[in-house]
Image (cartoon, rainbow, N blue to C red; front, side, top):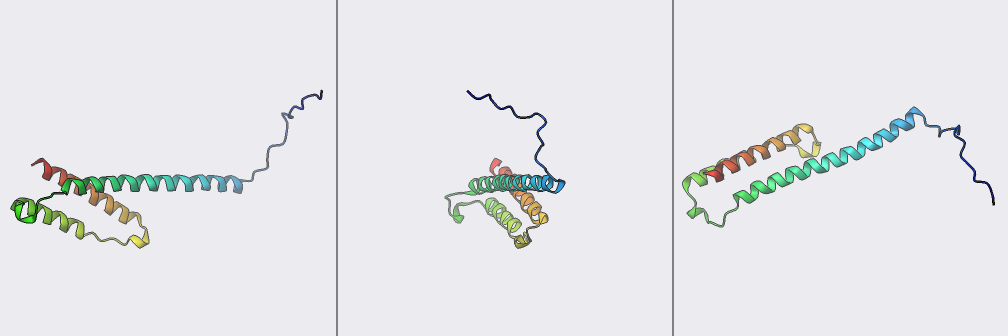
Length: 114
């Protein structure tokens, strides 16, 4: 039988330069960014779907009250007035979308409470 070789506890660690360490951290940051963006987008998608589901009605316009029609018009104007440039990918546009969806959820929830 051969004796079991033990690793030298004084073995030289792999040479890692500060640049290599930074590259590894940047790769981790990139993964975190992608995960965060997916989670953020998923949260907004769910909130938007909930707002849309709360608005769904099988009634034709003639059967809705004038107050409900006015509320729907106001919500439509609120959504239509958005000023976005999505192709630029700016945080400012994400904040506007997030704020709009929050407002929409709040207004839809309040309208359904009445």
